[in-house]
Amino acid sequence: MIKVSVMYPEQPGTRFDHAYYRERHMPLVKARMGAACRHYTVDQGLAGGAPGEPAPFVAACHIFCDSVEEFQAAFGPHAQEIMADIPHYTDRAPVLQVSQVVVG
Image (cartoon, rainbow, N blue to C red; front, side):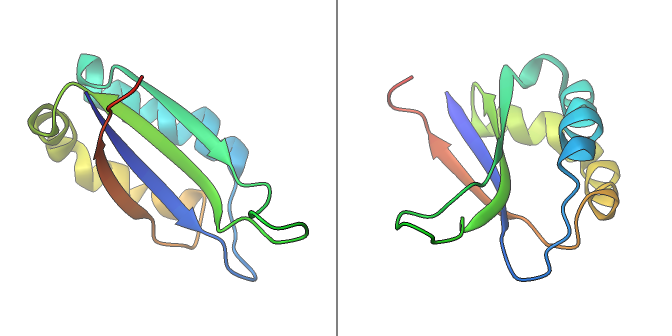
């Protein structure tokens, strides 16, 4: 299984609508990807590692799929629509990472 992490860096003045992301954007992603998206999680950054330190990311999602190929086949045809929705909830570009899940 793989995990696609989509993380939004926190910077002063970052605009991020968590309700929109949680209630509209991620359900859109799931609907377009269908069964290829086994499940997903949504995180809201709270703090960094040291007391009083801000979170490095304002938000993140993690999409779980069986393989990179399955993710690409399901996401690719809808990438333009999904990416076009980003300005509805943030003014930051996401950082992506694909990981192999080794303990689940």
